[in-house]
Image 1: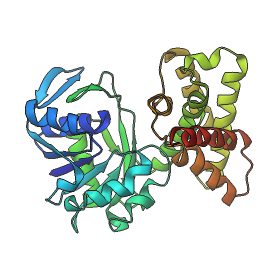
Image 2: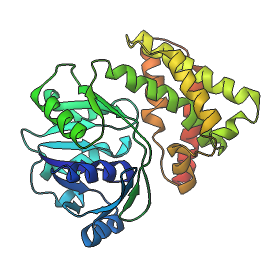
Image 3: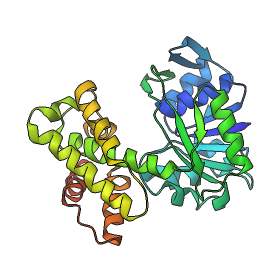
Image 4: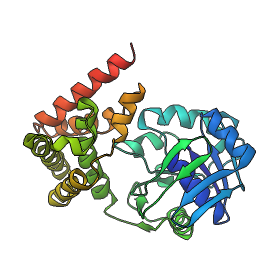
Length: 307
């Protein structure tokens, strides 16, 4: 397959590198010129549990430089950049291009549907870890999975091809008719830990320095789960709560992406996470005061960063 990766940060580069190693024609599309230059000059240096190696059989360029329609375009950009990035990458979009979002938050299917027929839009969630500490180099240690489905819930040949390509690349990909449950459960997890760390500058473990920290995180999970259930999504609140407790106990030094954005002076994805839950709650007239308060607080941080 000809596969384009839109947003070649840590995750996008990991996926692109593994897909290229599996024999697919891969192009990485990003605006990080130093990263693109390093890949084009020296290849992508990939370090995983399988060892360290250089992947040289892929291209890297800015989105507006894409000139060939891809069979599959995987979107990894931050949610607030999705439409601008797809507009820039129109050269990679053709009448048969399938679009897959593996982004955080809610509303991604709707954004992608502005650029392709709904039957060619797929959504999913992944648990693969990845870090990029310098241009042209990505690390990923530990296991992960991908769960995905056509956004309209109907299996298609494009879905089957995408799953086969990702799975053959070692990314443990499977179709999941309940993918919306997985997406909402990830939103509940992120709405709790990402937003709390973003406004407190705490690492995950530091949220337990007062007993009320864990209780607040679990209360946010409960609010998000209630909104999901009101929309017919059977979120397993106990499962998400267990994941939150595990993170608080075992990922104590971790700085979630939203906190990393705050520390770097970048805009956060709060609108697609807490903000999207607040909007969904309003449609069902559900009160979620903790989630809404954190949405407002992170927006204030974002506003200060943009001054």
